Image: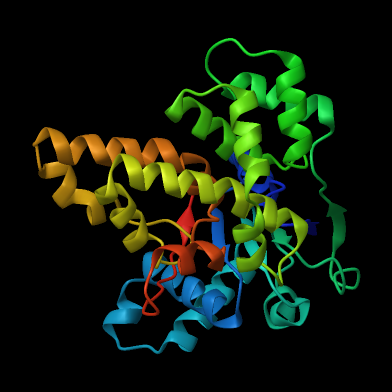
Length: 299
């Protein structure tokens, strides 16, 4: 069985897939999460799965393609698994993978609405209803707030879940009232609009929110911004915790403080994997040099 969830960036497709996997984790063995942006990312993740299941393949110098094909064979021969293909691109990229896989369940998240009907059922995910958006803000924003103020903020952000979460993180970190934050969002949207000229309205909304987050973070501690700049060039998937080990091992108060503050600013983006996906953030933070790395997450 194959199911597709499509929608614009930031509406919660990956979060929905993750929640489904969490809720039904006892029904599947194993649950596999694969970044599916490109055919190469799929091949790389399948090869990583083969390495986990049969380490001798890599020791025998099997190629990336050979290890990926071994993983496909393993899936064909076993039942009860859930394979999540996250952020898939062109449906044709999955033809060679989905055809033989009929002994488990496949859940695909994608921004693209067309071309899936021949492969799977499709669920279109939209932004939140206004009352649900206000409820989400009320649960996330610390302290007392008026429902009317939250309603205005939800409307300004188009009821987009990711933008709402990041806005709540900003309000909690800076400790300003909702009216002041709304004024800031409306004051100078031109910069965010210019840097996302070819993007949709939802991504421009995220850029507006992120613009103020970056500015406030950099004013508070440039070291935290520098760390975010480095992390933004990794692939938008799981990073090993050992990457931050030198900071965690540094017991000095400044290092541990700015690491905690950076996490406080960026937690919604870390959960939704969009820091790295929005190239406006890359241009705002980094030089024209970078590299990516693909990871597979097994839940």
